[in-house]
Length: 139
Image 1 (tube, rainbow, N blue to C red):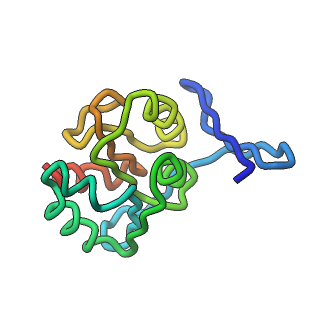
Image 2: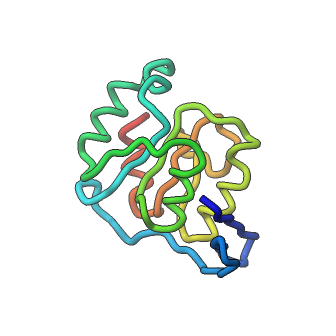
Image 3: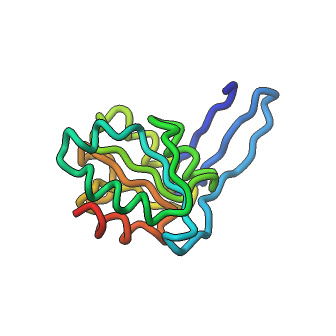
Protein backbone atom coordinates (compact mmCIF):
# COMPACT_ATOMS: atom_id res chain seq x y z
CA UNK A 1 0.00 0.00 0.00
CA UNK A 2 2.90 2.34 0.69
CA UNK A 3 0.65 4.61 2.76
CA UNK A 4 0.39 5.59 6.39
CA UNK A 5 -2.44 7.10 8.43
CA UNK A 6 -2.29 9.19 11.56
CA UNK A 7 -4.47 11.28 13.83
CA UNK A 8 -4.46 12.84 17.24
CA UNK A 9 -7.27 14.01 19.49
CA UNK A 10 -8.59 17.32 18.17
CA UNK A 11 -6.11 17.48 15.30
CA UNK A 12 -7.87 15.71 12.43
CA UNK A 13 -6.98 12.53 10.54
CA UNK A 14 -4.51 12.29 7.68
CA UNK A 15 -2.89 9.93 5.22
CA UNK A 16 0.63 10.07 3.81
CA UNK A 17 1.28 8.62 0.35
CA UNK A 18 4.42 6.94 -0.96
CA UNK A 19 5.86 10.28 -2.08
CA UNK A 20 5.32 11.88 1.32
CA UNK A 21 2.24 13.87 0.35
CA UNK A 22 -0.07 14.51 3.30
CA UNK A 23 -3.84 14.71 2.85
CA UNK A 24 -6.56 15.22 5.44
CA UNK A 25 -9.24 12.52 5.33
CA UNK A 26 -12.98 12.62 6.07
CA UNK A 27 -15.79 10.09 6.32
CA UNK A 28 -18.58 9.96 3.73
CA UNK A 29 -21.91 11.76 3.94
CA UNK A 30 -24.04 8.75 2.96
CA UNK A 31 -27.12 8.75 5.21
CA UNK A 32 -29.24 5.85 3.93
CA UNK A 33 -28.44 2.16 4.47
CA UNK A 34 -29.67 1.37 0.94
CA UNK A 35 -26.95 3.70 -0.43
CA UNK A 36 -24.20 2.48 1.90
CA UNK A 37 -21.14 0.37 1.24
CA UNK A 38 -20.23 -2.08 4.05
CA UNK A 39 -16.93 -3.87 4.56
CA UNK A 40 -16.11 -6.64 7.00
CA UNK A 41 -13.35 -9.13 7.74
CA UNK A 42 -15.20 -12.32 6.81
CA UNK A 43 -18.38 -14.31 7.41
CA UNK A 44 -16.97 -17.07 9.63
CA UNK A 45 -16.52 -14.79 12.65
CA UNK A 46 -20.17 -13.71 12.56
CA UNK A 47 -21.22 -17.35 12.65
CA UNK A 48 -18.88 -18.09 15.56
CA UNK A 49 -20.39 -15.30 17.69
CA UNK A 50 -23.96 -16.27 16.77
CA UNK A 51 -24.70 -13.14 14.74
CA UNK A 52 -24.46 -14.48 11.18
CA UNK A 53 -28.19 -14.21 10.49
CA UNK A 54 -28.45 -10.63 11.78
CA UNK A 55 -25.25 -9.56 10.04
CA UNK A 56 -26.24 -11.09 6.70
CA UNK A 57 -29.72 -9.53 6.86
CA UNK A 58 -28.22 -6.09 7.51
CA UNK A 59 -25.51 -6.44 4.85
CA UNK A 60 -28.18 -7.39 2.29
CA UNK A 61 -29.87 -4.03 2.96
CA UNK A 62 -26.68 -2.18 1.97
CA UNK A 63 -25.95 -1.14 -1.60
CA UNK A 64 -22.58 -2.89 -1.68
CA UNK A 65 -20.90 -5.55 0.48
CA UNK A 66 -17.16 -6.21 0.42
CA UNK A 67 -14.78 -8.10 2.69
CA UNK A 68 -11.68 -5.90 2.53
CA UNK A 69 -10.94 -7.02 6.06
CA UNK A 70 -8.97 -6.03 9.07
CA UNK A 71 -7.55 -2.51 9.43
CA UNK A 72 -8.15 -1.61 5.78
CA UNK A 73 -11.96 -1.66 6.15
CA UNK A 74 -11.87 0.83 9.01
CA UNK A 75 -9.40 3.14 7.26
CA UNK A 76 -11.65 3.12 4.20
CA UNK A 77 -14.43 4.40 6.48
CA UNK A 78 -12.11 7.18 7.68
CA UNK A 79 -11.28 8.09 4.06
CA UNK A 80 -14.92 8.02 2.91
CA UNK A 81 -14.42 5.07 0.55
CA UNK A 82 -16.66 2.79 2.63
CA UNK A 83 -19.53 3.92 4.85
CA UNK A 84 -19.63 1.05 7.38
CA UNK A 85 -17.07 -1.45 8.62
CA UNK A 86 -17.57 -4.03 11.31
CA UNK A 87 -15.89 -7.03 12.90
CA UNK A 88 -17.28 -9.46 15.47
CA UNK A 89 -13.94 -9.93 17.25
CA UNK A 90 -10.90 -7.69 17.48
CA UNK A 91 -8.17 -7.03 20.02
CA UNK A 92 -7.68 -3.69 21.77
CA UNK A 93 -4.22 -3.18 20.28
CA UNK A 94 -5.73 -3.50 16.80
CA UNK A 95 -8.57 -1.08 17.53
CA UNK A 96 -6.91 1.70 19.55
CA UNK A 97 -5.30 3.56 16.62
CA UNK A 98 -8.32 2.99 14.38
CA UNK A 99 -10.66 4.53 16.96
CA UNK A 100 -8.79 7.85 16.94
CA UNK A 101 -8.38 7.92 13.16
CA UNK A 102 -12.08 7.21 12.45
CA UNK A 103 -13.30 9.73 15.04
CA UNK A 104 -10.91 12.45 13.87
CA UNK A 105 -12.11 11.87 10.29
CA UNK A 106 -15.64 12.66 11.51
CA UNK A 107 -16.94 9.13 12.09
CA UNK A 108 -17.98 7.02 15.01
CA UNK A 109 -16.21 3.95 16.42
CA UNK A 110 -17.95 1.69 18.95
CA UNK A 111 -18.61 -1.83 20.06
CA UNK A 112 -21.57 -3.68 18.56
CA UNK A 113 -23.43 -2.83 21.78
CA UNK A 114 -22.87 0.86 21.02
CA UNK A 115 -20.23 1.65 23.64
CA UNK A 116 -17.92 4.25 22.09
CA UNK A 117 -14.21 3.50 21.95
CA UNK A 118 -12.00 0.47 21.32
CA UNK A 119 -12.70 -1.54 24.47
CA UNK A 120 -15.63 -3.76 23.44
CA UNK A 121 -13.81 -6.66 21.77
CA UNK A 122 -15.78 -6.07 18.55
CA UNK A 123 -16.29 -3.01 16.38
CA UNK A 124 -18.62 -0.93 14.27
CA UNK A 125 -16.99 2.00 12.46
CA UNK A 126 -19.18 4.31 10.41
CA UNK A 127 -19.49 7.81 9.06
CA UNK A 128 -21.65 8.49 12.13
CA UNK A 129 -24.85 8.97 10.14
CA UNK A 130 -25.39 5.21 9.75
CA UNK A 131 -24.13 4.06 13.14
CA UNK A 132 -27.38 3.55 15.00
CA UNK A 133 -28.84 1.56 12.09
CA UNK A 134 -25.97 -0.92 12.40
CA UNK A 135 -26.26 -1.19 16.19
CA UNK A 136 -30.02 -1.74 15.95
CA UNK A 137 -29.59 -4.43 13.29
CA UNK A 138 -26.93 -6.40 15.19
CA UNK A 139 -28.29 -6.21 18.75
